[in-house]
Length: 266
Image (cartoon, rainbow, N blue to C red; front, side, top):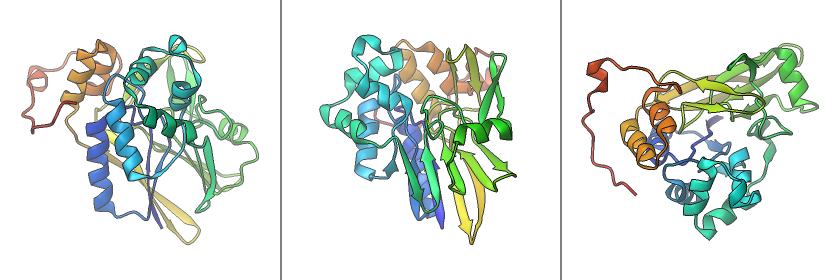
């Protein structure tokens, strides 16, 4: 059994398209999408329609929930931008997504933790950055879940944690569409993976054993960065281009524009 697991697309359509092409080469039996599909200053409606057409097993992330449960005045910049461009069909699709899925091929799917979509499962805060969560932290946050494999997203950091006491494995799929960000919950912190690649995980089960492959996919991140810049989101523009949230000075040869293939700008 081979499963492709994606998460946190955040409306980055060119990254999603590139990841889907890579997934097709991997020939998985199933594709799981762990949510936060469209929120951001990029291509929310086009991304929603792409995911609707593909009809993968998809759960709702915290931003998907906020887009359908919050009023426009309660939304942050990323959610508000996406909401303003989403069709009624796309909003209805987000509304009907489940918060989690249990026992799909002995896998539990959740966005954050099994009970809270806005909490990290594989990371803990240390100062203003995240570190790998301790086994004790993970066990506390999975509660009474018995699934041998738990897959999550939310933190945008690909990671695999083995729980020796239970034999369970917790895997974070990383982020297709946003490699760095800052957040103020539960306190202000940065998340940075250090490169602009689109990320997802391939999971293979042989008997009772699982193996994992982090896939890092090239796509035209300069194009995505320019889209964010045009929508007055310089924070996203820098993150998409570098994989770091805080501004960094690029060497001249990296700062030069890359040769691009044509791509329609929605």
